[in-house]
Length: 348
Image (cartoon, one colour):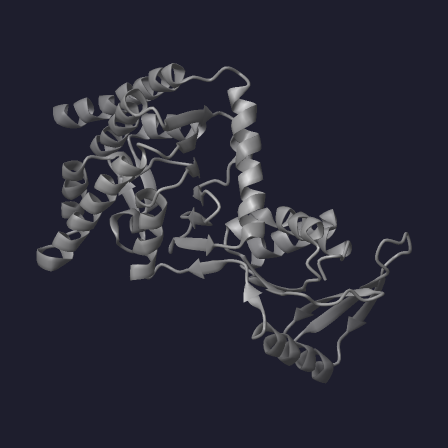
């Protein structure tokens, strides 16, 4: 139940995060919900890190009546189970029972799988396989009217020109139809995005630490799905300069485009990107792995939680008097440092 207190206990979350990190554990959480939105938001907020990284699959069975006790079951298939019983809204200590009987543990696993079929997933994880629905999600973000908020640890190729994007596609080795449809799709995205920006607001928070790293190395790694491909891709100095030029151009030319450069790395998920389409969906990329992935959700509870985080972050940064002019000046400085790598490559 979302009313459980133990499931959001700091030590429980720490142990799960540690197990995910050290053992590559995948966690599936099934919540029997009585539609307590405050408790649900608290649960989502507590597990934000695991949700963003795609390590936690969260499913909910809605409109479950609240009982006089709540029970949390931790099942390690084939090994053991822990059952924690709580009395909601009371100061009594939870009671923990350890189950090691193989038949009981297997029965709990089977019942979990059976219950999961009646649950609604809060987020959908897409693996490295590129599919048409990923293109549709991208287009809904940039080509459909409505505000878009982005937190990005890296650069966004959407601010390349169509010709610059075409050149990058050429480096993937595509030819014929495989090259042609990608080129046309990006052109469609760009034309639609420019139209959307006439009436809709785009806000983007970029990691200044990551930009400094890009300036120092002349390289920027990102998921290849930005180029309608699988795997990861490393942009060279020329590509990075082109994207930075695009950011500067949009900031100077488009009133509804805004960027804040954030220096506090603790507020970012490293090597990831969050996209929040106003009241429609959230999309999260994570590419610090061999096979980048994307997590998508159109559940309002999750959208609200992520949007609150973004709005608080934006308000905090804007309170310091951040302006387009300062963002342009910093991006231009990063751009010049990155361009220096082109001169070195030419001389070499």
